[in-house]
Image (cartoon, helix red, strand yellow):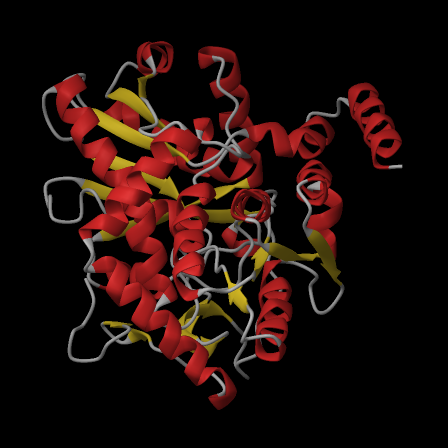
Length: 412
């Protein structure tokens, strides 16, 4: 996957574009990561921790009702929503927590959009006895209030970032500024497969536990590999997690689904690879495809889901798109709400709005496949955190106002 002639690159994407002041910190992290990756005891410790602390392996659920509803491929759902903290994010942060212990640092910082990575990082910090600061765009703070509440209860300091578009891009910028000022004591727990080397490769490695499990599970349940695997794509950590188990199985089509927002033609979206609006650039320490104007300035993005409105995308996924190993599509906000509603009512499962993007594309394509085919949808997180957004979207004003009142009472 990595271009070994240039460490940290995937084709022409990736790299390590950092200020000189951070070089020694990155060198320390690279040494710790390389040592852990070559040490079987590290992975054994990691797997054991995830089994005892986060209910791994997560199930691969056969969605019988949805399969019957569409009448095509048999639909299986990889249940990362059943992880401790409610999403796939805990896989990466617990692994990085073990690295923090090896490096002897006492503080962690992180960025978060939907809040799931922030909650996971705060949880890891509480378990390992680390000081924790979470940076979150002010817009995301408002629409993800339940996660902010839990981060604070877990002992983290949540910093609301009011710069720029006040979303994930700006939270990452704030976290890097903190790290530059506190690098001796602090580790930046990057939440996705973006950023400077070694973060894309390291996060993909830790998240690959999803795909390793899913591949074994589908062979046990269906007796063969799936026809297609679907995952939503923001930065790309859950997608790389499940795709990692099938990258060498070229008969398995991998499908990434980005945020189509209000429609690609509207300009209000976050589809870097599924639209013609993404362009090669360097931002936040790495080279990849970004939504930017002709002057190289990053554009504002839009998604109903707080975790998919990132302006860039993983350099690994940019490379896999260029080499045609992964196909990219986009789902609009309206399609996401319809898929969310159908999944809840047919299977009693509440996906995060991010994850529902993957369901949209799977639902479009399942009817055209054979009943002998199996497909997997990666359910990257549960939808509890989206209750305000969903209630508002379905115009359930009475319950939304009730929930907000209660939330304000608890917060006070």
